[in-house]
Image (cartoon, rainbow, N blue to C red):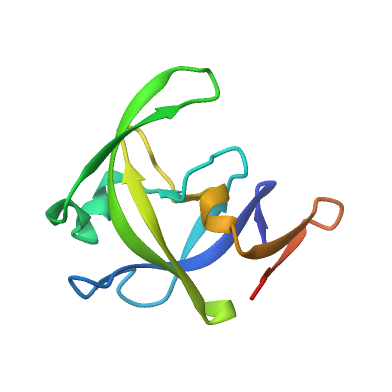
Length: 128
């Protein structure tokens, strides 16, 4: 689906090590951003709700479209796509100023994604 011209997908975030998920029930929309090369970036409050701040932390440098470098902190988590009954595990990071869940190209590996801006629709399916 598209929201205000931006492709989004319904997901559930999970920390399987501590048995925590976000949201606790239902799903949440995440932005598909093929310009972001990472797995996922989330707001700090969601990062804390998933208790990812209690796991081993890794620091990374993110390059913004303006070429400015910012530091992110992250850990590993799971992203579930209920519609496809599948999930992917990867590095979920956070940094100041993030106000939406963003899925990048590392998350999209293993999926076929068809964006149709004419009809404002997209299809996602697993390659496996």
